[in-house]
Image (cartoon, rainbow, N blue to C red; front, side):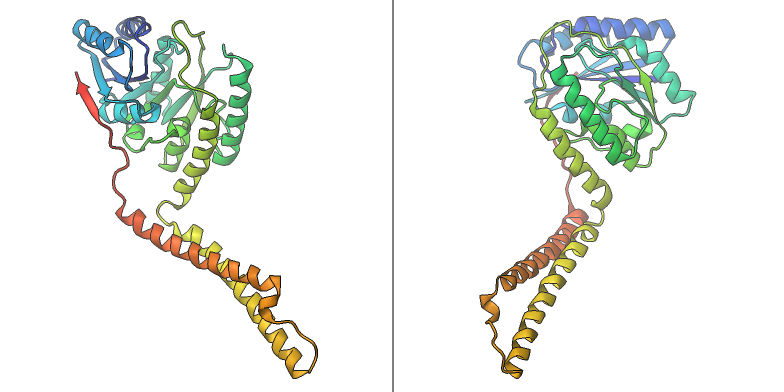
Length: 316
């Protein structure tokens, strides 16, 4: 199979017939062997009934239905697991991504040796309340990830070599950082393609302003996991030891200072009467806790279970 198209969706019943017909038209025109995997993320409208009807008319469509809404990352992760094509294309179901981009994306993967090609909606049809935070988010992500050639990390239209989607785990809100996940997994050939962005034709956006806060929290999480998931003691240990030593040295100084004052018969303050003593005590306790946290995290990382378990109601 040449291409698997993975489409996560939530309440997109109106756009699905047009989207799948558009994909089929492009695939037939270019002679691709393909499949479309529609992952219904717990829709409350008639999206699943629409998928069932589309499946009856086009056997190349696969539908996966969650019992409840888990989020876009969960839908992508399950779609990636089901994909069989040598190239995996992801796109949103709202018709803002164009299937006409698929042939060029496929060529970039197969003939230009890219591991991942991310779309860049250079001209967006979104309000300023969305575009300005998006630019800030992308700027911070470029700086922290070292992937300087991407302008739009969160674009839903992407192409992947099959090995990439089978090597990464997408959870939480990590769909925004798939290029970063791919880089951490050792896939460094990450490219960008300018794609057309269409105005939303049906319905309304499913993402509120809270996604930016979650996005930056996940950015911090992904960099910690990427660097220290297999060696958490290397993060917590040095900080804990340093804090402990600072507190211990300060305590010794206070004790020796009192002893010296007693020996010289000069006035002195009790160690426990000095604020510096309590700061050193906090540093010692904090250092011990951080060290123990690193130790426990080491045990957890060696025995962690699979975090991606979702209740799938039906697969057709």
